[in-house]
Image (cartoon, rainbow, N blue to C red; front, side, top):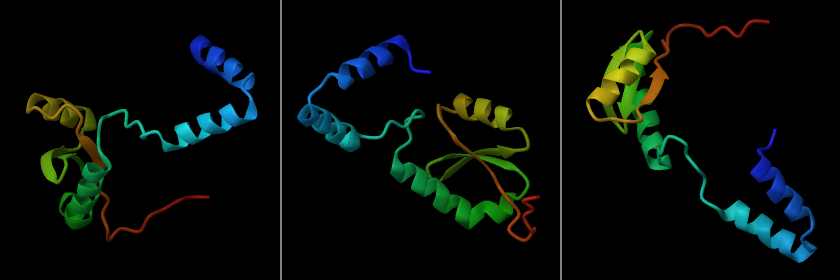
Length: 108
């Protein structure tokens, strides 16, 4: 459900002429994506490369990454988050390291 402010904006957009609505659409489509945790696409790519290379070493555990740097690992993601913040990484990338040799089960 939209907030009151967003609803006000949506109502105003409905009154715009077609050319202005198209200009707004183009503006929104070209606006930078908002990463709520502040991570850049480059950092996420670095973290995904790290996982591809090292995931088997940490299979069955959570890892906290800062770019391509391992910050912490263990079984409790909340603890890893706290440890990461304690060493100056405010928004660590947390991932569960799967065992690449174990079959995945999706269920029915």
